[in-house]
Amino acid sequence: MPLFSIYAPDYTDEEAVQRRLAVRQTHLDTAAKNPSMKVGGAMLSPNDALDKPDVEKKMIGSFMILECDTYEDAKKMIEGDVYWTGNVVRKALVARSCVTQTSAHF
Image (cartoon, rainbow, N blue to C red; front, side):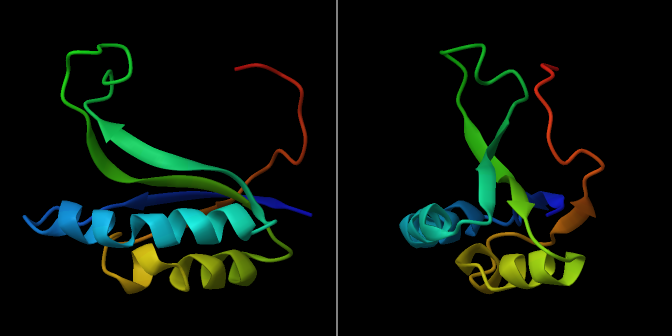
């Protein structure tokens, strides 16, 4: 089954973080039950936020890898997620991955 990479940046208005936090647990619970979800997480800003413990970390979007039969299945999954329906993410770029299985380390 093909893998799909999802890049979903958040809205940037003043209420965006509150909307994300309001539905975050529902999003996480749904993702944990979804066998198509292979990898997922929040994107943080600044880019080196994880390397510097004293830097304030801000969630700015989501990244996921889904295993689905088709592009349309992956797109439906994203558009049915509470981050999409709750106006947390402003768009979702869905791309089919060329890699289906690897043991290589990047």
